[in-house]
Length: 445
Image (cartoon, helix red, strand yellow):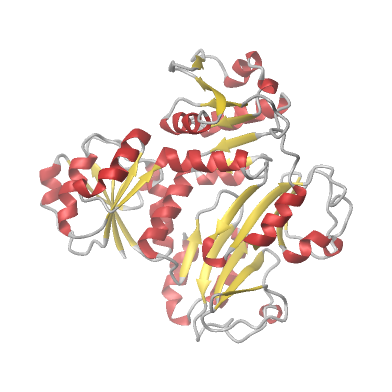
């Protein structure tokens, strides 16, 4: 598909990179007075000064427009481009506007509205109220999920070998994070204290696992309302605070701007010092959601050091997430990833090969097996996959198949693959031979 992206707002670079990796064509329309981000300079871009410039452009090859523009003129431009016949996908960075647009999108010719703040806030709310500290990612096409758990000193895990842990019989242990390193486990791998595990299985099996091994809900015995601290002064932080405030007492902390219910940080004061004046132990959870990834990581670390274990960390740059993922135990969330994934799903549905946008050190792909690929007709063990490459799930004719060494892969199988970046070469065994040029471009990214 040919996608035209308007603006350089949050998530635009990430979405563009994912689309190009899946062999789609992406071009940008950028208002000339805007500073072009360095990361976007690798993409073809048209610059315009006003709407007349855009209307004169040829969009005959465009299959969809994606608006990542937070300017006041974006709606007017969306309305004009809607007459070109291609679907309009519009990211709203203001939750009030997002809610209004969802009700009136047809007025502006918009097909899909993505409320950036609401999407992020909903995920944070789910983390605190439903996941009990275990961050869970759902793979809807497989009726499966991946859960991340810090085993701490839980005797059900610590000191035991993977093959001897009964609860893992229904789940696949994908990776272990230990002391800042990622380990690909084997049956004889022993679990150690403070390991962080990522496991995948059916949503039902993951649900049973979470109910059995989640930390005791610190909120259950509370006679008062829950209390949350939210750090940040952007739209995302405000949306998170507003979502949590519906059921809890919240305090929004900002560095340089004053809000009705927030405290005001001194601008020239390091966030770690400022947090020394806040009694974080008096709160039930903390969310770092400023527009600065480094500030978020520093303040989340300071809060953990102060004894607060319920911490959600929001990040914008997925490259930074790969670093933070080996140092942060709590939940890691990205509005950019969440919105981009929703746009991809609405653009294509489940395509033949799709890169999941995921916060962490893993790459996750969905692939539909074709008849003429190397893996079709072979058992999983005969593929001799790298240690960092795992088939986490198989959907076959609407039914879930638990992948084992003797499982024979068949044409039409819908696979979910987990791999460390250095193992990407094994993807070639699952992709049609005629896509050789595509593979070359995929792995050169």
